[in-house]
Length: 89
Figure (cartoon, rainbow, N blue to C red):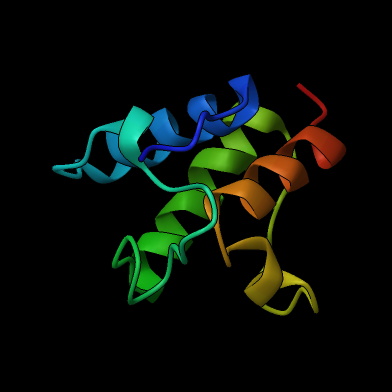
């Protein structure tokens, strides 16, 4: 069973798939599964690339020393929520 994604979750899923050239279907990404390692299988370089894309597209930076960085990238849902809260574009 697929979970319905919110519009921001779908936008974030598409950004992840497009920017990292993943073989995943954005609409089928489980918003609760981890993005890092198990789950979607991203590594630290992928997260760095995503941070750069997010900075360009949404106007805010996620730095590696941000105390919330592990939580921000813990799932599609938390990433989408962070983008909604912090975006300036």
